[in-house]
Image (tube, rainbow, N blue to C red; front, side, top):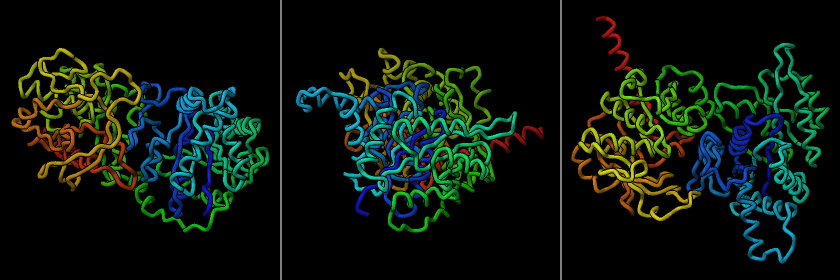
Length: 548
């Protein structure tokens, strides 16, 4: 194939319909056909990236290997494709305007009036085509955030229209995802919202090539015919996407609807191989038909919005499928945990994860949860701030440093066991200034994590400003809390592991970012396995107490 093909995925009627999942599913199907595929997200907000956004506003901030703070949909892209994304895979309006304004300040436009058209749309087109030109992908899938009709999305829609004109209809494709609501009172699926959404697209000069209709019920042939007729789309290009129990079933359903075949035909792609979805189907079967269950308590301070910890939850799902185990996640607000109620809240959990975060709100509950897991020998995984909480707890209750804390929370602490990284001192700007991206870690041989990874050198992604204070390292190791992973260049402690405990591990990095459907992360695999073992002991103990 001599030309990169570009697919645009837009959404209508309402937000949160699952454009990211549909995009990732189609990309995976095309990848299984032997094509090299990548996915890009265009976000209409003016923030340069989501790094400074509150998780309640935007959900999880996903970090790429090259250190970009991006939209959580990039996590879906990587989990479905098993291919790492980069900063080029997430473009925001903030980035677009920042680039154009910098060019104007340099005089690149030679005194011309800078306008949305052509300057902003030209920059959008450049960003869209960058992946295809530099990395030579066969297909670049671009998800346009927001909903068609939003003022914020108009420049992206216009840029897509221009690209279709410039590249030709066999090199560009528009897929529009809409909602077909079901009215229980009349027992009908209603197509009018879809018709109106397509009308808005047409008003912006775009005729969708394929429609993907989200619905609670299966579409009848009459509904498909009606939508095809009034939206000017071929009938076989009206694709059904019904609700499913797991997002990983979506590619299988879309393949049954022949979405990949229709896409290949419309883009005039060269002959591709027949996709082998056997391994993927097996994972879906394991997820849908578990033979056991394990309870995991996820302790964090943004638990009201599940998307705040999306990658952690999906990583647990991947690991659970390994053992044909249903992972039942209980989201626990750290502000609600106290010394008096911790047993009541956590006693029924077979494993405990203390989630990442920033700031001192809810920190005491996280520290108490870490202590409970240590003392009760419940499998524990602390991620980023979660690791730091475990370090603070150990310092206070085992080493006797009663005032021990992180200088993030208490600048005057007598025992700063967690301290600001040296290279972070003097930095005042917040956006994109943390330790970000993938960094090396050397694992100590003979430790649990060495057995889990089965290798000595790893690379994991980070997002933090504070680190373990090596001044106190000898005291921790003498007491059995080992630094089992160290950055070979900076000596930064990457992994802490408690000896004599079934599973008590804290990591400064974010292992959840690199777990995929087909390759679950080893830390989550062994954490779930240890939690399963604990559930058996927990059950046996309850049965003994019941007999008494």
